[in-house]
Image (cartoon, rainbow, N blue to C red; front, side, top):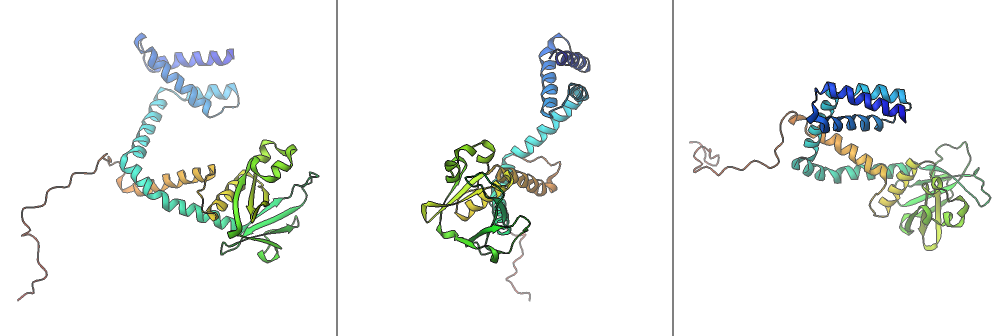
Length: 279
């Protein structure tokens, strides 16, 4: 801790000289130093030496450049016309994500079976039919790769699915309380169908698969997607689409309000009447 304090004091002296500060500028210098430290810590340096190198490389001129870039980006992304464009683009991009989720369900995923004896050697595969009306599933061998839908012995009509449960609300998590560690809870989801006692229980291979499946099943049930993966993808797609739409307006200031529409002309003598046939 003492070494870290020494590095920060040296940084303060260095930044003070770079800013050519006087006593009245003390608060401004401290703001810059605080920003240098927090920005460097956000990169999660693995050693004190790495922290020292990074924080010293982030000098006052670099801070000014970063501030200017962030300010311009904020002005572009928070301008009312840009926000309005985002809202118009959202439905189209959400449809794209929904379709991707359904396609992923049609490809299918291999899941592990967890029995009461804590054996995880059995595997099963689940996939959605191409017409999105049936969920097919069945036991498979470990070396099976993307089994044909015809080989999956069991199926559930999507119309019979009543609900989607996640985490500790899943029946197989309630039955096996000893397995209720956070890692497993974050990957568990269940489908209830026919009557509440019947359920198809899943433990996803990864958090990514969990997000893909819960989003896709939510789409099938007519619900909104809510995973962190969906929100991240939506922001990325929105950012890319906005940049593409604004390419022609690069370096052109975007006004907050639309320009005023001028009054109509006093006459339209300049307009040619095509309805009159030429003599």
